Structures are given as C-alpha cells and as structure tokens.
Image (cartoon, rainbow, N blue to C red; front, side, top):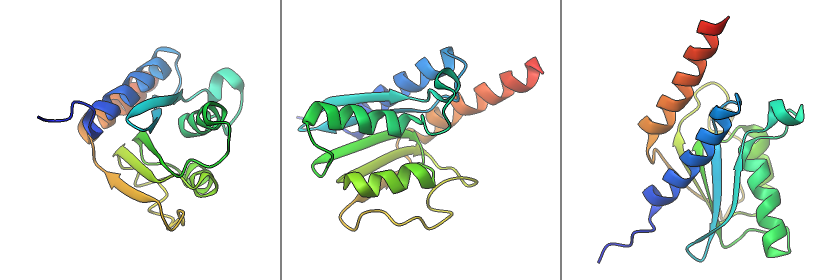
Length: 149
C-alpha cells in the first residue's frame, strides 16, 4: 500500500502555508517540518507583518520545531519548503543540523545552490517536488503586485 504521507503530501501542506502568506500580501513561501511522519512545525513568510527581513518561512518553522522538540537540533527532521532556501535559511539549516531539505521551486537568483552555500554534511536534499505548483503561486503573486503598481 502506498504511504499517503510522502513528499508530495507534505509539500502540499507547505503550499497551504504559502497560500496563507499570499493572502497576507507576503511573498508566498511556505514551510513545514516533519518528524516521525508528523508535522511538528509550520511557517510562512512574515517579513512584511513583522517588518523583519529574517522572517522567512524556514526561519519561522525552525523556531517552531525547536520549541516543539525542546532542543535546537533537527537531525531527524525534514524541512519541506515551496521555494529553494536562500543563503540565510540554508545557513540556519546548517546550524539546526536538519536531516533533509525538500523544496519545490528552484530560485536561480537567490537560492543557496547558486551561491554554493554549504549545508550540514549529513543533510540530504530533494528538489522539484510540486515545482510547477510552487512556482505558479509565486508568479501569480508578482504579476498581481506589478499590476497594482
């Protein structure tokens, strides 16, 4: 029997977070952190609401997951995020020692791969899960932004 809780399932949950950000007029990036097959943390961009350039979806999720687990290391966790993490978020993931990062859309301009940002040596990366859906929400957001200006 197929496990219903696979990468696609959890990326859809991250997309729900991205939609929340979109609805708040934030850049629509969403994240969830999974441990033992369960979502233990959720996050979405809050940079506008908090007036904080570091309030990315991943950072929100890292903080929530650490609070849930009662510790700063996320070795046995997976981060699902709709957009490839930037250098800051990839750097933070290094310090959390997260076991795995799964992202949807690539970010050829600001993504960690472009800058060759070093992840923790034990962190595994899977990319392109629901990439089209993740990318579409971002494109829609920026098209609407341009049309309002």
